[in-house]
Figure 1 (cartoon, rainbow over the protein chains, first blue to last red):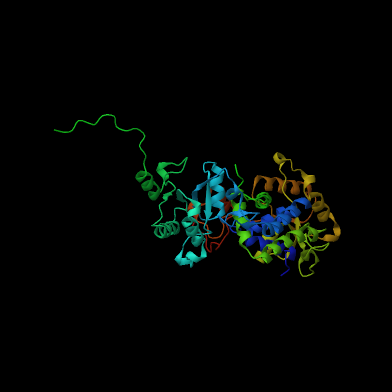
Figure 2 (cartoon, each protein chain N blue to C red):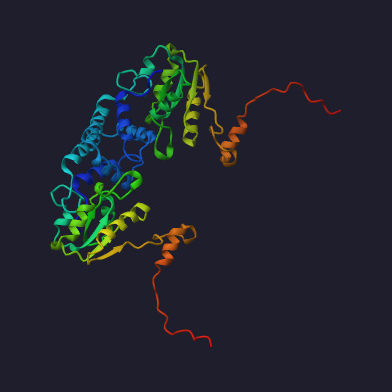
Length: 213
Length: 213
């Protein structure tokens, strides 16, 4: 059969397909779109790719992404360095930063414990977290365990709690419940259970109901 | 606020977001995945991008993708050069080639007529199609109008039919009906109507039913 796809098109399609969430069809569509783009735009993408790995590294302190030894957050004296938020990966850090609601620092684990996938404590930055917390110079007041609400996330939280049993700092988890804009009718049972368990008082009872006599 | 995203990460995310079907989150996820890849793999992607536009052009005859003046299909003497399939874009050509069921040649329009989007006959390779068909040297026997089953696809077919009213060649369209593996229960009304209208005889009646007397 005649090959309908020139080899240089095929090789780009093949490379794009290696990206997460990109199937054959998406890779073909992306390639065709790139072909139609101005030369400078494709050159910009190619250059951004080349620069990525040569300039980006993991922060020595928190393992977030940075172009320096320490990331911008760890270097910032305006942040609360006694408040430490533990996340799975840099995307979680970015998501939390975007809220603007957090002023502490981070620790990026680089994943979660998952015995099934063969991910153990040594595959993550757990040792680094423990020695960071245990280091008296750091004076952490609170540790927010912000792993995803998945079985692996829970396992990782249990591991950290166990290891830091002796530590005096407060450990917290993110609130679980209904996401903003959700419809109770369509919420899954676990979410609804968690939102019931975590319910908050809106108004305290002013007077007690008369007791039955 | 401290910027959580190093500028070289941000610029790759921004470039990836320009690709069709890629949102902010997907671009972030892709960037993070690329960071974790071996250097050679990212270099291969970057190289494939650079090569794409410098080596790929549109075939002079059919406007499919090629690395030469004429594409591999147009150059192939083993193909049926009297059978011409008109498609919207190179991805449709690739899809038809993959079936292995077509041995003719193609004409890639580069889109469809869409007055709403301001796409007129001059924005497509329609003039080239008409002169290709009218050229006596080409001896086309059949023209398969393989645009998508959309209003724009239909408009384009109508335009071509009108323009080639005087031509002697056969014009056909792809069959419309139920896709393979479909469930009649869930088929939309238009598809079901088209599959009823286009129904095929499986067995001819052998004897006529006795007429009512």
